[in-house]
Length: 123
Image (cartoon, rainbow, N blue to C red; front, side, top):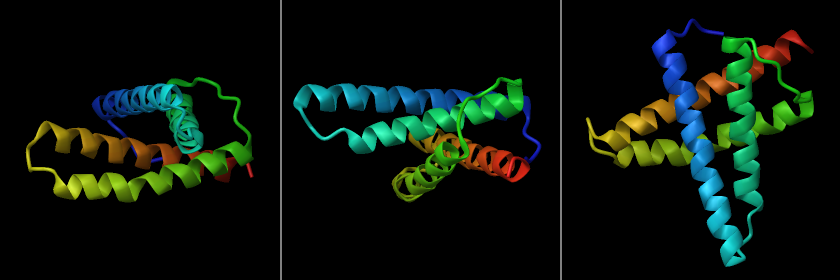
């Protein structure tokens, strides 16, 4: 895994925690409305796996995910990039929204890298 500064580690963990909170809120609202929640649940799980993997690498915390769960989470995380990158392209330079999206992209990239590193080490 690439060398990451303590500041970037903290920002990445906070970014994924924020993303999880966003998905939990969306899940709650969709459940109340009776909407289909399958996609949001999958994305919430994938981001949670990504966060656990970063905490596993950086903070020596254990995780309980199988290779199949990691592979599924990796696929879903990669699937999030196009919409985030599209929002990023539409955001104004220097705006808080752009900063948030930059951090989200970086944190998801690092989470995918952590999953890849773990999978390659344990395959």
